[in-house]
Length: 543
Image 1 (cartoon, helix red, strand yellow):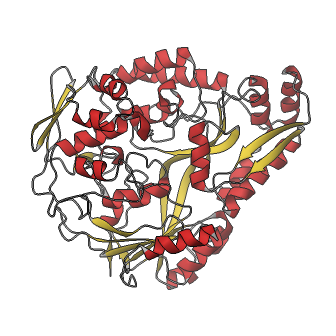
Image 2: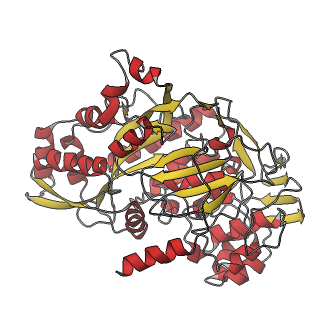
Image 3: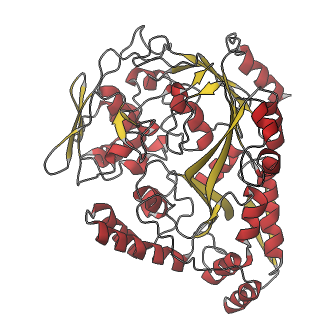
């Protein structure tokens, strides 16, 4: 009854929604955990967030390899000779979306970027994006500690390393060179937020979009559909698409049927429907082609692994156990069952297409049940042993994957207790360190090996992305050298050493690199495959 009342109150407070029959219809496979750009760090939330929020820079939609270009900045930054000072000019006459926290016609100013960086630094925000600036900007860490839980104090503190030189110029001073800063300034973490909005909403923006982007949030329902409309005062070329409706469709078959009936414009081909989509030559079958459907094969920078909580007294403290689990899982069978062999078996913590990926590197394990059993004996591990495996969401596919791992490990006497979660609940457990064993993944934020390597840095402990709580002093020392190394050959050598350390410690069991088969209707034009460009919907056209 309490749940029903909350639902009624939620919808009772929302305004009437526009008819979306002529808009862009898209599917979300799980609940969006937040719309706050300081907190959004999952693919589902990003689908919405990047349509309303913008950053100083973005990736050029048509250029490959990826090229950074200005978005809210007027040009690329001016960088000092010592590579530690960035001066950035900001566009004038850029409007924020209307919001009750803002005066009418509120325009973007340099201080809005500073406000957001301070929000990332503010300890109670618990931003997973803090690692981007931790110990990198002059004076920021000191201000963070002095402010403590006092947001007003932090917002009013002048920080030497982030200064508004005037209303439309921001200057960032670094403690040491940080060439990846330009990529950080492409991410929604660094989207400008008006200070008056932060104050008005007491730093709680989880259900809001107060951005400058091409689409305005009309309604957000974390357990249902979300609606966006084109921003009439958008500062750049207005998107061709007038409206976007995100449908929450958790199940594979539900998404498939909605796509076939024309209710969804784009869908990823899941393993369950793969044989109904392509012929023996991996080409789109004629029946779908006759319906005006197109197939796009999309390489991605997304990859997956099995993760261990290195603080856990069982899996985290016994390397032999982790190795035994790795040898007990048939990755080839997993990839065949759940990706129809579209995915590629992973051999490195850095995906193909990124500097440092070595296609000839051999992973430190193979599918070998007898070796797995020997490792258990060597580790003096008594079986049967029960471990808890947390599922990422409530979809059928997620449950089936968990059942697959349960069946595999039963062969060596390890019992798996499967714990079901909604995606937001899973993220909450992850950030609190309440997981033992789970399937994890990463969609790269920018095309640099740092984005993969720092996933295993101590500096990235939750709320950052190092949910395994992996920590190795030698790894940290070599990582710091790697991030500053400009010589390509020396950098590759350092990356190889980092890979060797992770292989020996095995906080992860690498599974696969993702590839996507995408279906879309021909009425939708200018769709280009991209695993990095999140704000792509502004480029699409509907016939």
